[in-house]
Length: 176
Image (cartoon, rainbow, N blue to C red; front, side):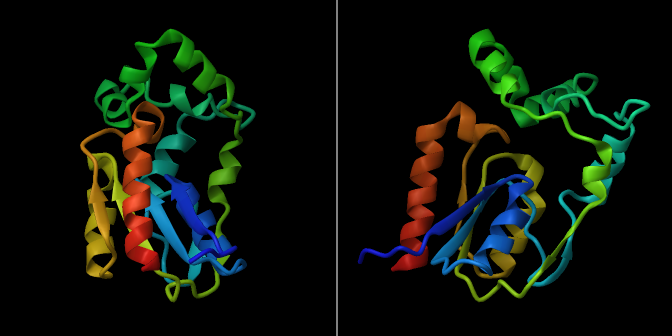
């Protein structure tokens, strides 16, 4: 059944943006890939408080942050969960990845989105890394379809075909 209404996909911190867009567009569904599940409505920060505190410690004197891929250089176990170690083994791919990363200011993480009620939109969750075990549990609690990939947070970059298949599988469950 053709439609102009999209299924929105938000990866990582873009999950809040996807939920916000779902209230502004005639979305058929929303899929969160390895990200926090925003509240059904109300204030939603871009990241969890613990990550915000970690990021705050990385800021330079002027408040700018290193590019995201450099945040975990002193934490190899976290870098492995994210997949930065695997991506860095492909220097050309890693350089291309980093070239697309913005320079951010630490104050951005103090911002929040005031979400209108969005939980009427059919939703699903794809867990790519163990970092988001808590979000998988929340998705299951909400009765969402869940796909688990045995990968890293950068699974969409490292294994795009497998990630796309999971998105299609969840989409089929949401719109049929």
